[in-house]
Structure formats: structure tokens, C-alpha cells
Image (cartoon, rainbow over all chains, first blue to last red):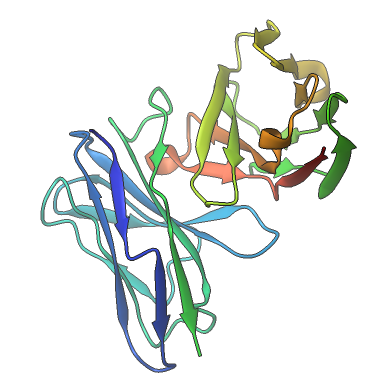
Length: 114
Length: 116
């Protein structure tokens, strides 16, 4: 089945540690996105990638880093510089980075940092 | 700058009642898309509808219907004869032609609780 995989579903880390969230898609999409969701709020864009080896900052990129070495994969690293890392993280992809194409979302990873 | 407002944070209804979710947006673009997504307790976002700024026709899909009015910058969503399975958080979102990378701007969401 085609889709987006995010693992793990729940992740726990100690403060001060970097943590990498996985996002894989087999939809052959060029564009991929990372969003953050806080309780009672909508999603906010962290980073996006329009094509392999390219990525751009979104609205709240501070404290995060990404890579896009393969078309299928867009991992997100939450660094120790991120002041409030506890949140629900959603990965998405679309055929192209254009409003003509809808974004498909993965199941999300809930990160808790204590 | 683009903005999406969902003024209702939570709505509680009894099964079979109708429920309307409000969405008001702000944009300077003439070309844009509006979306509704459903987020059940599992957390995954489920796409419901996409409507472009040039198509103001209302749409009905089963028990769901959408009312798009450019004059009031609103894109409201109605669930008719609600069911317990409709309990979820619903998000309205906006994508602008000039936004880099096809960025989606989300509203804060409306939690719908349908009681049996």
C-alpha cells in the first residue's frame, strides 16, 4: 500500500538530548513537509523540501534540522536547542510543492521530553 | 499575511443533530485553496475537501456539506445527522499561490464531540 510512515508513534527523551523522527513515503512524491502540533492548536510548518538535497525553513525552524538525501525519506532532528520540544509531529508529502497538489499526512509521532 | 480562524474550540452535540463548523480566512492572494481535515483520536489527519478560490459552488458529500462564501471569507462545514464516529478535531486550512513551498496555514481546530 502507498502511504507515509512515521516511526515510532511515541518517543520519550531526556532534556538535552537530540532526537531524530523518521518519515518515509512510497508515493513517489517530490515534496515533503514537517509540521508541529501543540495541544489545542493547529499545525505549524517546521521545514519543507521540494526536491532531493533541497530543503527550506518554515515558520518555526529554530531548534530543528532536516536532511533529504533520498526522495522517500525526510528525517527531522529535534535538537537540544529547541526550547519546547514536547509536541505531536506530523510529516506530509505532495506530488509537487504547489497548491495544485494536496498534502497527504502520516500518522504522526508524539514526542515527550522530560 | 494569511490567517485562518476557527472561533469554536469545542462543540458538543447529541447523535443525529446537525453541527456546523465555522472557518474564516484572511489572504491577499486572489488564487488560493481552502481545505478541511479531520483528526480522529489516533492523530492522523484525514483529508476531507479542497476548494479553489474560483469555485464558490457549495458541495455535498454524503452527510458532509461545505458553504464557501468569498464575500465573507468563510468556508463553513456542516455535518448532517451526526454520528459518534464524527467525534474528532476538525481543521480548516489555507494554501496560497504565492506561499513558498505550498505551505498550509491551519486554523486552531474545532473539537466535535458527538454523544450517543
